[in-house]
Length: 120
Image 1 (cartoon, rainbow, N blue to C red):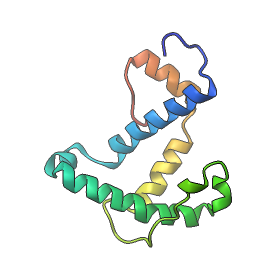
Image 2 (cartoon, rainbow, N blue to C red):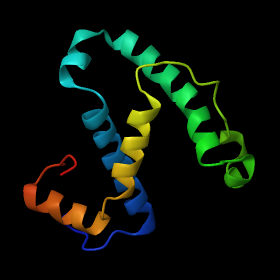
Image 3 (spheres, helix red, strand yellow):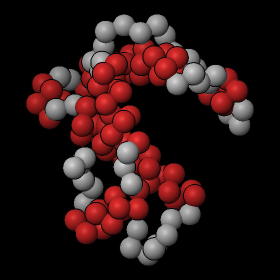
């Protein structure tokens, strides 16, 4: 990012994807939890959570196949919600937190700290 004062749309999308992944794992899973289970178990449980939470998010935000016109093969409403490693409340909180980030300020903080940062 040193060489860019402004990010183009592709770079900004890539950046948002990276910080969202970082924040998702930092904010939604405690280090002790991640150290206490095997990679295989976490992988299985995480993708199960993606599937059941995808349905919850699809319904909550009224996402339809029309929202995927550019990528119709990617539309997947998910499975019926069931208890999993992430609750609806945790996901709602995470979405609210990430949605409230001022990207320009976040970029400046990362440049200043020279590392990614969690929610303040």
